[in-house]
Length: 319
Image (cartoon, rainbow, N blue to C red; front, side):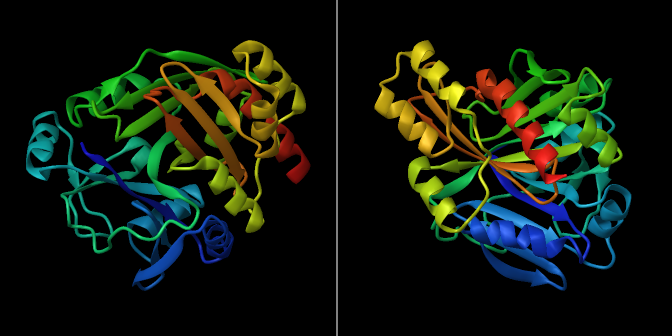
């Protein structure tokens, strides 16, 4: 596995304007791919909006509502991956696009593309976004082991240790899968209680799916400045978080104030990690923007309780 090449949203006609507005504010530009199908690009990140009146995406939207219906994974060679899948009993499926596909979580599709097969190339990056960093999938209880087997055996991804993330209404079991280069990262989240945001996502989407999509920034301060200038909504982080950061990490007050002014979350281990979140009109789905510095390999797990509480407040105000 080389990287996440694209993410495809299944949308109804009424859902499309809101998502297009969000992507436009984030600096993505659209190119038509076919009737009611567009690819929105920035850097190497490609997001497909599919509201065609028939086909796989349409059927997925009818079952699940507006949601991510497919991923495109770039592989060096699709043949060996398909052979492993067949040997383990996974069926080859047909979607709306010409690439071979395997079944992903909750009836979604995983398309396999070899380099150069996508009918688009890299695009300008006005918001300094270079590509995808990771995505987070919410799964119902009981599906984790089956999906881990698929990703390890078929896609040859390596899993990281399980993390328990506290939510204001319970706990979420989280496990990441990565390729050795760190250029493909998937996070699987399984809610352990009925009141968490992940549990609400399961209920509203009639099962699991992609709850958030993280994009790589080469300069997150410039990215946030661009987003603010385009009036993109940023998740508000409480002031006490930044006071705690100063004490916990020994940060200079000026640095903490800069983080606060840009609504950034911060973490560090071998390197540094910066995060900003963008709510969407879809509510329980959101975008994340991250910058990794100095070999950081985590996902900002220490910030998850603060982020989840902030999202809960945002959803309460939005309702």
